[in-house]
Length: 455
Image (tube, rainbow, N blue to C red; front, side):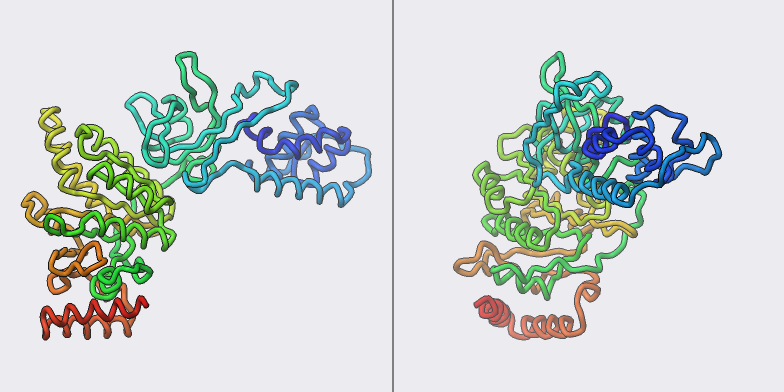
């Protein structure tokens, strides 16, 4: 951590220590494990003391350098005051857990402290990093670009990746806008040069279910037993026209948000539907590129949303990426591939790579991908083979008041037994037997029972 950053975060502690005489600072430095406290001036000694006491730097090795200071031992209340100020400063550190907690805040140092040692402006910034070839730019939680740029040197220094949620300080640029000059947090944690990469983790079968029982929708509650969805699942919901594909995505987003999962929605539908998704699930990040958006805009939104979800998963969190719809992404890939020519194969494969990214990471978090697609589109057939949870929508089973229906006779989840306990497995087997034996009436009875449980 740079000295200017340390002084900004631990300013109350610095001011307290600066108010003591040099002998008091030296004794406190010894008490917290700083060696040779007589060899430096007061300012440098305070910086070392704060670094060691806060754990920012490793404990110093023992040394015999420096003369003994002829003064009394450190009063216990002084040590306690240092510890109290350390705790208060750490609680106030601007490490934010997510973009939902971002607020516009201004920092105003006193005129006496406007030195060139830091060069930092008063603006705190937070956003998702989008890489632009040379350098990058911060985006809002919904993928909209801001006026805050990130220099390539800053990306290299802090080992930043596209999709990182960055908090820090920005200064004004001569060309206009602002530029990040200090990174304080990455994904809510201090910057680290040893972060693991999403692709380096082993993929495992989903073993923890995402609860759908919180939904007021009977098909969704039935799916919780008959076609459970786990963290790290690849879910494909195929339905005919007017089969409720967007309604399914919206209901799935509700369930994910209620389960405290980081929810990201890629919305490629009608403009009013994109707005409706944002209003229906305020905590979700909605990357919208609705009808009329250029293929390049849709691919940009998809790449940034996927990168953001990967950063969450590799840091140990659980992310859910909902795509409405997969067919629109495939069409955008094809259109962009025709434009780029030699990069055609790479662009065409992006939709497949996005869908295949869903997995539970061994030793980290998970990325769940839930995509909707029309049942009559043959270009989606290859995605059905990769899905480990395949749901078929049915206009026949859309009951009054429901936005979509699911044909459970055709729908299934691989390794569903790993997501259910013994009692739930027995209930699921009973319900499936009822559907198989009685057909349409059995399906209706199952959905009716789920409705009754909602009352």
